[in-house]
Length: 525
Image (tube, rainbow, N blue to C red; front, side, top):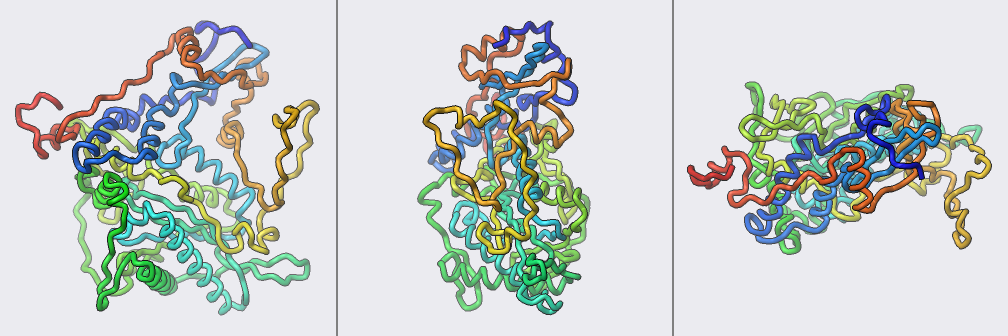
């Protein structure tokens, strides 16, 4: 191993390599808000609004985010063996819920996999389905119900394509879709909804060369989207009634309670609050201009072009990209796979509230939402996926076992020859078995961090000083080794401290503490 470098001998950390800079999450507003309110949320759940602790998977996700990207928790040492240039790469939490860095990596890797190995070069259209408020908390924690709603949604859309294209002369056609489940709205309220990216047309088998031929959908109208939404809504209501999720009493639909309150009382109350924006996941203040509210109408309502609402359900189908629009296809999948919140959209106000800047204004004109920091952490806790919840699903001709899938997905990449002496790690072990070969149509896999950085135009494998090869020479996990190395570089060896739990009424901002019961002369902010 190379000897420890002195801080004066390396351009790191005083000057990062060109194009690469280590992220420092502890300096961000979101990380600070979670550090200062996590213990208070856990205490409030046990002693306040629920009288029971939050589930272990929620605690683990929140605590993992606090430790994500901190050098004090371990790092990889990357060095150039020619000149000794080196830098550190901190370990990540691998979050699947809200961590902007880990979710951003997952977004980039999944987009790369989908475009390279799954989605053919045809036109794509996005369909977004949202469900009534009364169903959202149940849908967020019932995996079987979520899977059923997703299957009905996909089957309805693909069936509509099949029937619609028969009118255009493409009989017995098959379409396909990739469905991504998002758990929150832009203001982090709990709102499980589905983004379905469909092939905007159908493949028809029987051409002279044996390959299916794609027939694009020529057009779509508000009436067609309204008809599709009514089919989806009717099928979903039949399923919900049949499985005792709702009951229909003389035309009045009522949602029935589930057993989440009995199994996880703290999670149930937190989910209900996160759906409605009530304490502890609220209240919230909205910054919006004066708007004119249109009167409600019965039946399907056109909110905007190709966006229909009906009985609490809504369907949006206005987003489409062409077959040759590579940038548009990439941006579409990045949008449906995006993290629920971005670091730069979270700011603190002068009165102790936290503001979420919206990328796009809401329909009522709201451009930002302000709330107590504890409310933001409560919404983050509700956004955590339960274990074994699938957030990405494939349907139709893109399903794993579809017969026509091998003929429509992109061709496999050219085979690369292995350099002499470069073998798989498993082959160097005497008792290890080589990995089983996967089917030719199953090519998705883990995308290394270096390749993702290259896609962003950042070469982390080339030394910025001499042009040599940068390699990982050590994974530093031992606490004593971590402290020794950081101390040698003059970096902090202690993690940012977690704020202790506050007492009732638990809020951090003075405004809400006074509103919810703090005495006027209380010293604690």
